Length: 240
Picture 1 (cartoon, rainbow, N blue to C red):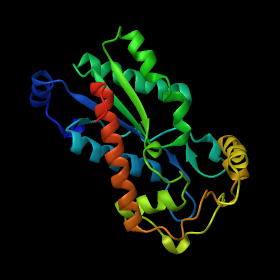
Picture 2 (picture 1 turned 45 degrees about the vertical axis):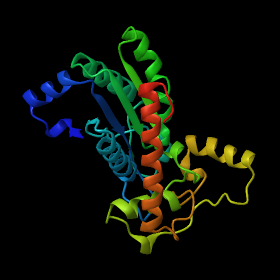
Picture 3 (picture 1 turned 135 degrees about the vertical axis):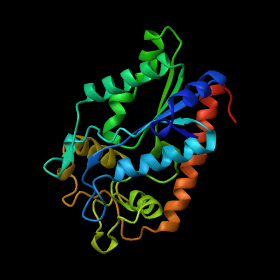
């Protein structure tokens, strides 16, 4: 793995010229995650995931884009950018990578609100680059068996595995969907995308109280393994 931000120009350019390089751009968010997790949670998790994927596959790692689309969390704290802003930043970065000889890019997403602006990024950049640039947007929660949550069991376990900045004594249950049908959960999901506080008053979707570091490590390993397999499939066109 090579971290672009800490690299030196001559050696970095030499590495890019010596073989086809693949880059990773992690994208997170700054928003509330209940009373027990830091507002940097999405950014912290996706940074760790991207770092491990880069190490495992010897990819180039770009600095994390820490800001995402989190307006739905208001009046809970959030620092948000517009969808068009995130799309423009990613477009410019990918085009700049191509100008520097890097033509394969994975955008690893750590926040649900970022899904829409990155969804068709690869298609658009393939067209504008005349098939020279390949960009693959991947959201990490699609690569684990457990249901995604917000500051619940999954995110809290992941944070326990990678960070000491978790206050488990403040963890409380939020919205519990276990006894709901898929239709009701989907309805709440749509409402949460517009106003998260209308769905859960404490900003938590799920139950973080039973989260453990051990569970977080297992989930993290599963995500890294599955995303790495997808990356190789994207690059080669063949399943590993």
